[in-house]
Image (cartoon, rainbow, N blue to C red):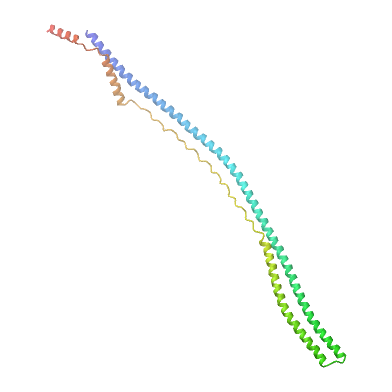
Length: 273
């Protein structure tokens, strides 16, 4: 009976020790598997993050190349438009300059003709007065030649003087009007020449805004996962849990405690006494 009891106790202790060791081993294995899974996931997430950043960079640089090519095309087109507008402005300025030169030359010809007409009229008036003088002298000579002197010659001279004074007075008035007409005509010709030039307005080139040059994309940021930490060794809590499981196993392997066995033991002890 004593041998079987000690054997029973030994088996209970062995079961408890086995349970304790098994519990610790399973804990260590589960933690090792968890570590492997965490590191595997970290490696996969890291590779995915770098691949995603690389793909984003490639996509951004491809789009940057397209935007840059479009910018070159638009810049060239805008520059051609600007040169075209400047050429139109230059042509308009050249036309205005040529018109101004032509108007000035035409004004000079008109003013010259106006002066020529004025002096021609002035010369005609002078010739007319001189003809009166010559006619008066001729009439006086004729009167003297015919033997008429005295009052006849004086009458001729007085008549000439009156006509000359009247014509001279008319000439003075006429000359004033001619000068006024000449000044008015010259001013009218000058205004006409200015109007010919001013009718040609300056050409204002249309403004064209230069397209905005695209900027090179920045490198995509890599959001790598946080590097995991190893679970480490067993903790006091793990040992405590394993010990609790071993004690539970030990109790589960213990034989049930009955009343008969207790009575027999007490009877045996009485007999021995």
